[in-house]
Image (cartoon, rainbow, N blue to C red; front, top):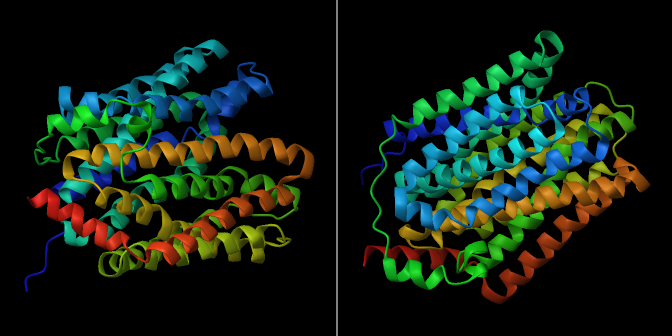
Length: 402
């Protein structure tokens, strides 16, 4: 039997373009609060500038169905990249708090479109039989960007100033736009009667039908996984642990190791065989964080965090994409990123408030609690339904072929 080819020109172009887009975005994550403070923003204003982004990304995803019908997936992706590029430039121009808030809202629109349509297009390009593996590789570029770009942003600001940081961020997004033009996207016929039926309520816009349970798990995952990305440096400072930057290097290495393994297991065994161990790894890492007192313990958490996130993030996305027909994948992708953004944004706000009272070390008790609910809910699901995610994926594929 011939091997189904995964690494086509289209897939390679999409992987690198997606990585550059994430790199351009994540350069800004640790540096925009510094930039806002430099321009006179208060603590609450910085929180608003940071947090409003996720909610504007969620809002724009309500309109992805309309965008697909009017423009198609690839042109929607172009729109998102162009908005992101213009917003990155605008941060350097509009330096008032009001200007940064307005720019941040627009940037959320751009990011909401790009994340949704990158994943939907990837699902179209990757052969169904290797979708778990392919989505794992697809996410590696963004994972590396998420690990390295924030450090690069801080370095640029410290050594060369804010203008240089914005230039590099804009370059990443601009090159991503050019790279996307090299990727040819297969045309997907959209069933009009399906669109009309599913666009009639707000619930159907927020949750793609049939993806409710993995969407719920994705939200809880966002709380746990996002709390590490956002607050682990603050925990290290509170615990007097030096060189905490090594945490993300070790975590990234473990993600690299876990993604191909998890993807292949997903394709052959179904979601349970990846989601269950991934949730155990991440929960264990969060529990150990509450006891962490040394760099060695912190690096041990990085291993658990890397394998947990490396298994869970692509598995949850692929599970949701496989549960729907091809003309609904942009909706499933939007649902995934909506729930991830709800978990990370709301979790950051709530956990940050908790940390003001308990400190960042004890705050992770609550983050671990979210992942504990994730694990219990998934075990109950398996007891009731078994690993029927695999069967549902095959049913969706059969309907698509028909």
